[in-house]
Image (cartoon, rainbow over all chains, first blue to last red; front, side, top):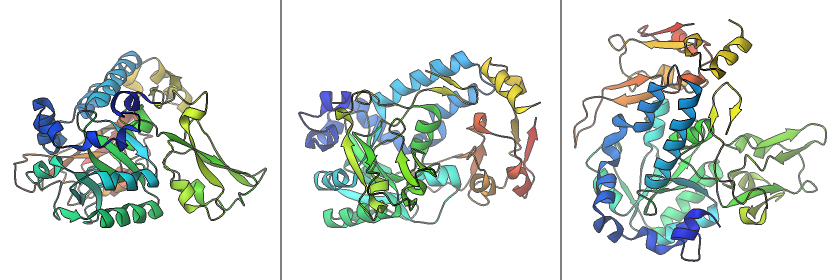
Length: 284
Length: 91
């Protein structure tokens, strides 16, 4: 069981625990209220950016230290984790109210201003987000539970990864639907090793069923699936897999299944990408 | 400088050998008006930031910063496509 589930799950997955969605968590905690209120306001003051900037040109040692600090900061304030489509549907039944807005990451990283709404926000965050219309230039679109479920299923078919987000852990106020590298979180996680937990599952391919079509290879946002030309089939690097289940959705043969991370001895405590110094080959 | 040497110098923290992207804010017409560099960079090195933001208003002054510069390969695609010529590369 992951640390979050042990501390905040009440016997379940932490993100399926109804308690982590109630508005009282914000109302009764001044620090959290402040964080939620300022969330949309702080995009230009983002701490991670300042640190990256200060480290360019960087020294290896300070890079490792700062990355470790950042990892802790995100675990405390704004941690994400990929969730499978089944669990995302469950989350839609628990969270309320739900609305969708434009994605700030796509705007910030790729100047994407198409008006397509990708992000699902819940509860108190919706009240505060209206103060900062950069976040919501085309408005906030409320969704019913059924509409929200249709929305996440559609995004799953498009090949986007669902991630669940805390606002001062363990309060949950958002589900993002992302891809690499337009998502700040996936970006930060893969290149620098913080901000996103690995998921509770790991994908496994049944080689007997795989016909080597390669659909899953191009879908994987984490670079975990490769095509082996010798056997003519795809395989998953389980160390790299985040357990989002996007590959499973496109497999016509039903060759991909999700296995509990806890059932795999070497992966049961594998929650983060190793911190690396880019280009140096150094690992932690 | 060869690629291998560059890697070595990074490993020992010899930052001065890194490729550096220079960004001239005076010339940039704004990330949301143009955004060519953001969209075209193969490594997605750039990130845009709003300036002079006010509560309740949409900000249209978004500038950029080569935030993920450590991943830059120095390929020069951003410079080729920067219409106002706000970017330059120091190798």
